[in-house]
Amino acid sequence: MFQPLDIAYVAAVLEKDHKVRIIDSPTEGLRNLRKLDAKKYRVGLEEKELEHQIRQWLPDVVGITVPFSGWSQTAFETASVVKTVDKEIPTVLQGLHPTTRPEECLSHSAVDFVVIGEPEQTVSEVVNVLEQGETRALERVRGIAFKKKGTTVITDLRPPIEDLDLLPFPSRHLLPMEAYFAAVKENPLRGKICKPWAAVLTSRGCPYSCVFCTKHIVMGKKWRARSPENVVEELEELTRTYKVEQIDFVDDNLTLDMKRMERICDLIVERGLDIEWYAPDGVRADALDENLLRKMSRSGCKKLRLAPESGVQRVVNEIVKKNLDLKKVDEAVVLSKKMGIEVGCFFVIGLIGETKEDIKKSIAYARKLRKLGADSFVFSIATPVYGTQLYRQAKQGGYLRPIFSDEALSSAEPLIETPDFTAGDLRLLCNEGNMINPTFTRDKLIHALQNPKKTLQFLIGKLM
Image (cartoon, rainbow, N blue to C red; front, side):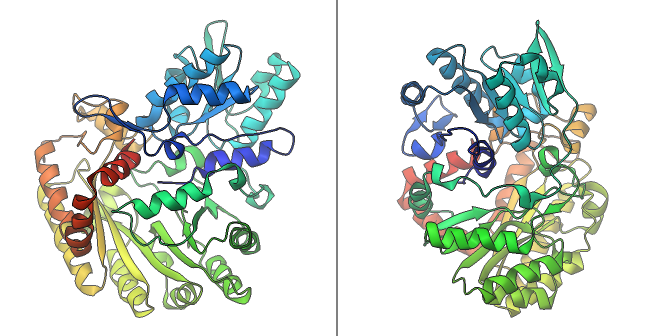
């Protein structure tokens, strides 16, 4: 379960001049789990319900966010539902998949426009042009793709938004906030969230070059950050308006500017915000020190995740291209535990150039980190997502498995095989790595087995 901040930010910009509504189909239809075939499931509103809501609203423009390629088919089906209501309603797709596959998206007749990159300003300009009926001006809107007389037009890229403080806070009043809280409490594998919660994004962009990472594709390589004051104002709004008590900071580089993060922590304490907060998407170990961790703990940080990716320095440097000293991971685990902050770790296996022996060493390294104080581990199989260096390596080297497809990208199946490992090898090694988790293998697994339907809903929500 996640809160769609991307479309909530777009809605906030549009609300300045337009009436806006958000339909969060996966959340509103969370209990509607459908089995499509032996291996495929879908969760979300039925097409008839979606059509009903669109008919009631009769929007002038419909925007559809496609954060994962595995959701692309559902997005195209949603666009078709819009056209069933009124074929003249323009449809606009935004997100990771449209950014990397604009022409493929436009090959579907129900898709009119594709946003490439950061969406807020682009969608606003598209809506204004359509509202004014000046379609010739579309070619001057940067960061879009559309069809003109059967030919795909891709305009110049739009530069990233430099001053993120200029953006309004996400339009959470348009989101089913109570439903998020209720849904997360029922997810047996998520854990930790037991109070009203919200996701907050304080920065965008990633200057690093991890081969599997998608974060820079939409938001760019340049790291941009909101001011501490702006961030804490949003936290105050969340506690005041929505009674939020737990925060997930979903940044990719939350502490990259350590002084900025210190200031955020200081302001949380100074303003008396009684919150717990987490960094579930990963924090760089070399962007932490004892002083910052102390302030993080005082301001309510309960758990963070580190991402060593591999336990082999050669793999980290030459294959992942992460530019991270693993000794910093050791130090960060020890310091975090000293400050009373729980630590989880992310590992990625199955990279091109990695061997089975490398992966076994990563599993051994995870066991070492557990002894140092880390308490949870996520081993994932590398996914060659469109737009990543890993995808280009796999395609050029002939390492993509025959099952590779948009839909396969939403599965947990290995999609790469090399002379160094098979798909079966990766499945076994991934299971071995994840079995290091004592809380997963006992408490959460038992809970999951006792609640199979909820567990399946959760997993489908994560994978779709």
